Length: 437
Image (cartoon, rainbow, N blue to C red):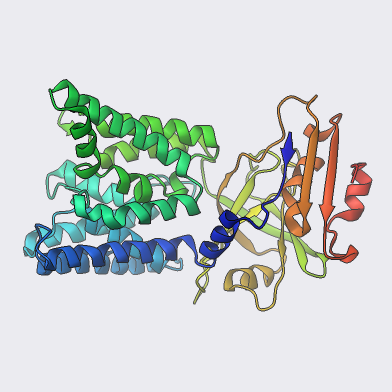
């Protein structure tokens, strides 16, 4: 069994390039590019909707979510996240029929309000459960006020939907999950058309050109805050949502729809993951090396995680840079100690706005985390030999594993590289743990 860090491969270089922009900012840019393409198609007469209808719907959806986000931020005394609001508004733009009718635009504005409110109201212990855009779309559909049509599922829209979805899924490392959903959903749709007498290839083409399969996989199913923590759980959720997406089910007056299928998947993810928000109080901080620092927190409630997993910290602050308000860090603490949660990070000058604010926290300060996840774990078979390869601050996930009871009586060798002796983080503790280094 072999664990290693990423080397300088083309894939790693692309991840670093994409990593220069926060995931939220990247989504905004891609969704804006898709919206711009829809206007090009409309002007060329290749889309059913006029530029005026597109513009009115886009402005209504985006402005409404931005305003609702500001109001909710004031009511709940939080920093409104502009990128998050923009994403919700842009997603709703692609879901509802473009129009210039004032009444219909009013319902779209109401959908935007419902979507934004769900982030604050449909929560459990400060953790929101559902995809906001799906909530807004479902609320309009179930009340009959303005049923979502997912007009983004137009053949020529695939010109931008396909590369945009691939970038999102590659950046978030969710291509396998999306692949399961697409295979299940498109497969069932194709079988349904085949059973009705349509040729298989034509049915398959219809599945991708008339159903929002790819858009759904890339921009709805992939929302990180509503995903379960482990890979197999995500694959299972994708399969379930794929079935619900493609099979025309109904319960009384409620008919299955893409947005309802996603909401059911969100409930499954909530059941599998950390149920409730994560609140941490900073206990102490110390320098590990000249370029790295460790932060030790006390969780409000015991945190469930496995050695090798990561924690996503959220630190809303004024004027955030392009890296955003959230950041993922490997957990370095032993899960057996419920009173301690620790992470380590590289210190750079100048640092991002997030790291600057994080490192400026004083003992006693509180910070929230959005999720725990990751499959970077020791093998269950304790007789298997383990080789760990780490560079610099990349030692962090291994430290959590080596501190845990799961590392005892295992045959483990650690290869640890750094630019100098001073940059070998946790060197004394590794010696105390008796690790072969």
